Image (cartoon, rainbow, N blue to C red; front, side, top):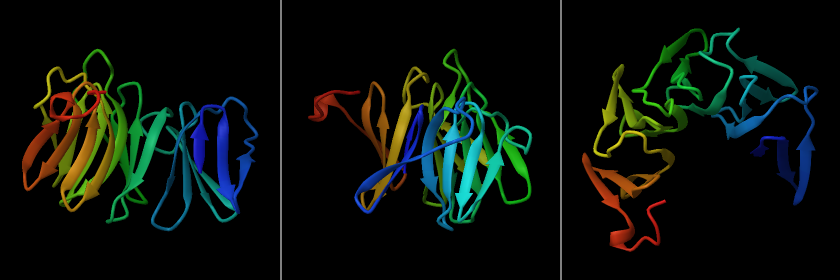
Length: 193
C-alpha cells in the first residue's frame, strides 16, 4: 500500500492498482497494516480509514480523535491504537472503546507527530517540532538531548543494536541499554539530514 496526497495505490501480482475514493477532497498521509491485517489510511483532512475485508470504518473528530489531520497510525502489542496528529494536536490512543488525548511539548512548529514504535516496554514517538518522546507507564518523557526542540524525528527501526531513529539536522540516533548515541556527518554520514 502506498499513500500519496492524491490517492492510494497498492501492488498485487506485480501490478499497481489505484483505490478510488468517492470524495476527491481527501489527501492521504500514510498507510499501515495492523495486527489483524486491516489496512489503515490516514488523511490530512478526514481522519483515518480502516479497511478490513469489505468494510470501511472512519475514525475522526466525530468518533473521538483529537483532530481530522492524522499523520500516522500504529498498533502496539497490547492492541492499543496510536494516532499521530498534525497541527500541534499531539496524539490520540484508542483501546477499542475509549479515546485518550495527549499533547507534546509545543513550539512554533506545532509538534506534528510522525512515527510510533514499541521498544523496551514503551512507545516511542517521533515528531516535527517536539523531538523524541517516550510514553511509558502512563507518562510522557521528552528527550532534550537535542537543542533546539524544533528538530524532527522521522523514522524508527529496531534491531539487535537497539532503537534507531533519524533526526533532521543531527543524523542518526541510537538507544541501547539506556544510552543515547548520535551518529552524524563527523562520524562518516554523508549529511546530517
